[in-house]
Length: 134
Image 1 (cartoon, rainbow, N blue to C red):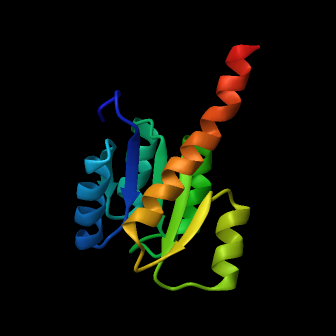
Image 2 (tube, helix red, strand yellow):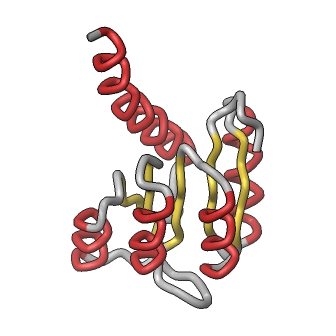
């Protein structure tokens, strides 16, 4: 990961989505890493520090919410965004109650994802800035 740029871990098993996200987010100054399953994601979450983690709700070996629980322990300060192609009120409520900062539906508008990421990173930075001024 490039420490000068905000780091994003994208967890999705669809190669086209990973490629599209990576190209788009890198264009806006993000350093993007990816994982195609929960096992790979857990290793990356335990070995690296990310500013943002984007989860697919359905992965081959784990649900996004189960992985979100683990990410909360390994990356408590990261912005967490859940994506799903199989929306339900129950999934949305569970994701948000477990600490997801946002729950977005596939196919997702890349500009919407970027706006959510930037807004949540700003919100996360505001308390730090206020604390530094004290």
